[in-house]
Length: 124
Image 1: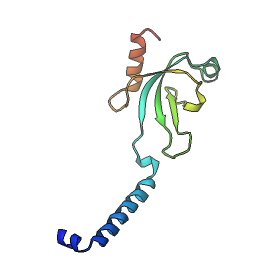
Image 2: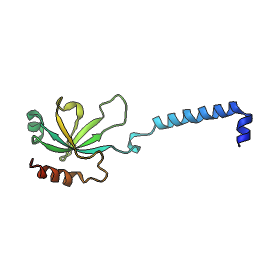
Image 3: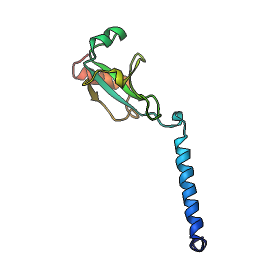
């Protein structure tokens, strides 16, 4: 195989480029539902009164960061409340405080552990 490659360097370059182009094309066409969902448990502090009144929230709420889409150039990040309400990050107020509990929810029971942390710091 090495001898064949050494005798035909142009063929090796063409095959390498073909594999590269095919790989990039295939990767860009993977549907977003086949990509792993990125989630992270957070505590959202200082929820503005307008959002609290509309959605029956308290000033501090446990939320989960969600990636709604893998599409570029779209609003694709949101926070999800325990009620199932999803708010895009752009809909939150600028400068709002967020406490990151974990960088992944893989081994983190969001509902129970978040409430345990909130009770521990006396915020509930």
